[in-house]
Length: 269
Image 1 (tube, rainbow, N blue to C red):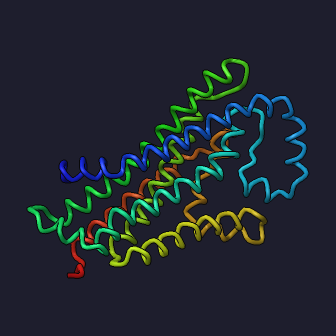
Image 2: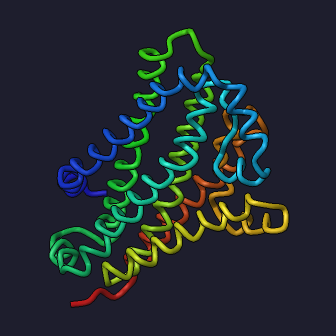
Image 3: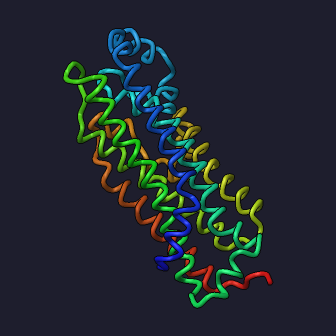
């Protein structure tokens, strides 16, 4: 990795990271602010969820309202944060690799005394750092919201909340790796953005559709999002360790392949 390039790229992209981080932190604080009102009507809301078709509750991660982290896992980690981080991963990976190739910046960078492997590895580290900043800010805001807005009046399992955030980070570490791999072998910024977006949101759509009924549950097996189960984490269901390890392995493998392929490919003059 190139320290000088890492510092420069972090400086260039830091404002964007912070914008997403502040937005995510604000939204999760909003969830904590809303929860006391939700908690007063827990039984009625659980009854409403129970009347829905079984697949609908699972598709939208409606895991219950009896604890703050259960409410937030469904309302935020199951949908809103997924969309935010998917957009971040696709856009940022394209900016860091394909855009620089498309606009000629990469050729200029490689004319300096450095190697393709170091450049690509540095860009991958910037991508992961941005993801870490956003998830880290969300985690800290969650604990601040619990202390400030809930206190000891409502059930909140800090350990499960931490695991929920670790799961979100690993899920999008894998997504970032896939988007980075696509971008690393692309010459055209728009094509890289389109292909990455189609893959990521295609995986998400397969997972969503697969939750709607047993007849289409096989679709989930085709999606990496099936390894991300926020409802199971807060509900204390089966251990998520194997799925989270698989996501970490997918992310590392995809980033490694992206770096290796970028080092060997022909770049446009």
